Image 1 (cartoon, rainbow, N blue to C red):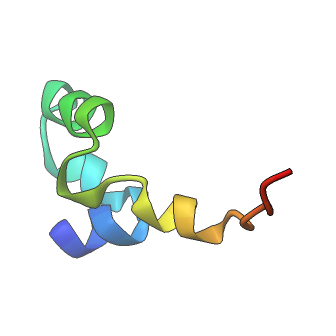
Image 2 (cartoon, rainbow, N blue to C red):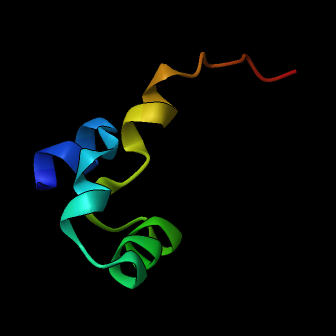
Length: 46
């Protein structure tokens, strides 16, 4: 389940109660959202 959270696979959400999934998302626990941040291109400072 932790690997699913870290890689951005939404399957983990069905493995935990909805309240737990919400807390993990809000607090970005277990590197939630890190995979999405890596995909965004970096912009040079102006």
